[in-house]
Length: 517
Image: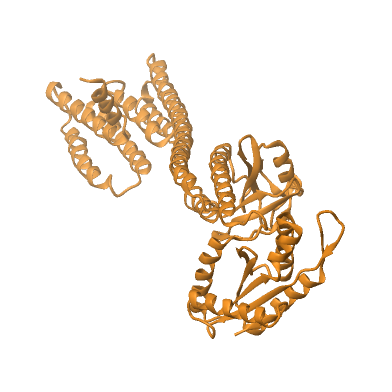
């Protein structure tokens, strides 16, 4: 027999139902052997023998409908009565059948516990002493009492051993539960780490900052399952910009993040570049960036090239929600996020270099062509006006010829500054080419566009530019043309043609004026 099969056999035999039927078989066998070899006996002994058979069949059906401990305890009492009556009828008061007590008593203690087992031993002792009462004054007295005490000791011993076994089993099962829980947590953490590593590849491939932030929010929400999360980008030592967050399971991105002060433990985190984990937020009121109802939180720095560029912050309404493993996984994600955010920022700067005019700092002609199309599509979709201002410096060639090209560059920079000071944040100022500039004004009617154009004209005219040798000052003026969608054109090409026409009209009217068509 193989060890596995042998172990399976013993585990089955240790079950109460198998022991019950094993002892039934031993009692039946004892009856049968005695009946076969006894020289003469009282015919009434057949009554307990028949009762044993009928009672065993009845027990087979009752065992499934009754609670095990109560059922087995009751059958043990019946067995004691059956064995006692059989012993009396057999005429053997101190041996033979009474040895079966030593099967029934430990079985009762095993299945029902020490107290029921002691009760069975006491009951068996009473039966045994009662039927041997006539001989207690003689020599066998010690033998009767010894057997009675042995039954009590056997019940107590088995009861104690079973109680300890059940206690050990309970502790062992508790250990298994803890082990299973730890194994489950470890498997979950391993799966999270593998998933984060896999998604980090796609995260690094995204070059748009908004897409990177959105992907980080997805990972935190779907893989880590955090309901409260924020990702910040450092803006100086004392400030951060909130790029995105999860509030009670709802994702939010902020393409134009608001600057927030960096205080409390989060400021320490940036300074030390070490994660922090707070078990109870109530015991750390100076933690920073904690909201009402938050019981615990965790924050890790986003480090790229040995320098913190931001931080990630997770919180929970449960106390002690974050463990060491959570911190490790969060730190892994923060490292991947730092590289992805930095790549997106570098890509953004590279794009800005390709769409920004080096001299004036305004967008270039290529960006203007792309943006005018985008803004016109938006204006059509939402049925809103869109205006364009075209600006040209008056007598610019004469200025270059008189004061030189370096001075001409200063004039261009001066005009760029005046334009930026005169328009809104949503407006788009571009260097159209040479001494011409253009401004795209989303959601702006023609009358409002004329007012903005007039503001630019006045601010340019009111200033002076000092010559390179500082010997003289020069005033410049500009001519401006204004055109508006949809009345002046329904395509970018038509609108640009109309604004050019308005600019030529301003030049023809003596310059330093705003004209429309």
